[in-house]
Image (tube, rainbow, N blue to C red; front, side, top):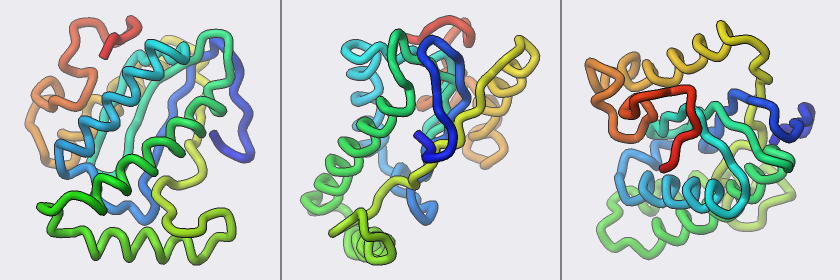
Length: 176
């Protein structure tokens, strides 16, 4: 998750996964759908509990926990898998007009870090914040749901399709 902050099983966290360089990869639905599909997998097979989320053009905010496991470790594997998958989709998509530009950026980000040989897609840290009170939880839910409104994408949070604002109850575990 973050190399500085440890997460604990069954505790609730606000996390942010950011595309390296804030590249607007998720402006295309095919890439957003891939992220959602992988979140569903993590829910079904890995004990990921998502209480609120929003997937923006270059980052993902979530309020999440992991049943009987380390959320940070799971998000690390999620980021590794989705990075490979999305990069492959970019490389093989003949209709991706931004292919060369994005791949060059991700290659540049990898060149500045010894851990990556070809491309560096996700930022390392997830900035986990443990949520300790109902007031803090609601503040983060509001922040998450209003992200697309602040970005000027929609006028009402519930109109953004890649957000839990579309659901009735933001504080129950969402089944994507």
